[in-house]
Image (cartoon, rainbow, N blue to C red):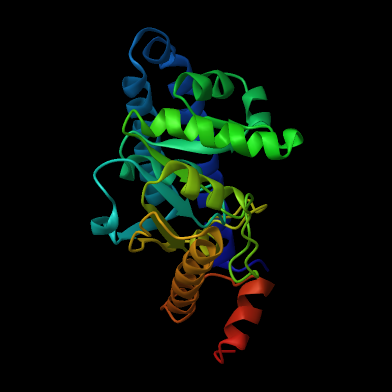
Length: 267
């Protein structure tokens, strides 16, 4: 017999997934005039509204709440937001928290109907990874254009989703942006992958924690910057992992998370 909790989680996950995609589709269609006929900041605000609606659905239908810590560390103006990336959650949940945000994203996402067009219209920073070093230089130039408007840039420094507890794999692109933009970088740790696992249909009830860490001011060399950023994100990520594992109703832990806890002496 399938445990009752598993059945409930599956049903709630199905309800959220259906509502999330339906809402996204409807908002994409009815939002077309916003993106086509209004100034760019209005379109960005509409994407932030989409993020808020998605968070509401996640809480009500899947039982996944969000706790945000460290908002006092966010500058009022341009900043580079270097966030851990564990699930699709980050692609919408960070938007409502930031000032006219834009994201560094792979150019292949332009192929998604409407989403691709809206990404261009809202000034997302698109990276063509087939161009190698040229792509990184283009990314920095686009970053300068967007921060000149007062925007905050979200980048996932590891370049792809990584399961909680996985060994860090930070890429050089974030250091190039840090050096090229000359603005504060705010590291962000989170534990979203425990409750919204990558490549999994289920969403596990609980509380996702998103924690903004003290900003790294410009002026460090690339090596020192990367070390400081990685240390801050990984140490906080370990704490959030242990906190969730010790909670009253811990989610199922992926193998990487169990191994990391064991390495921390908590296995």
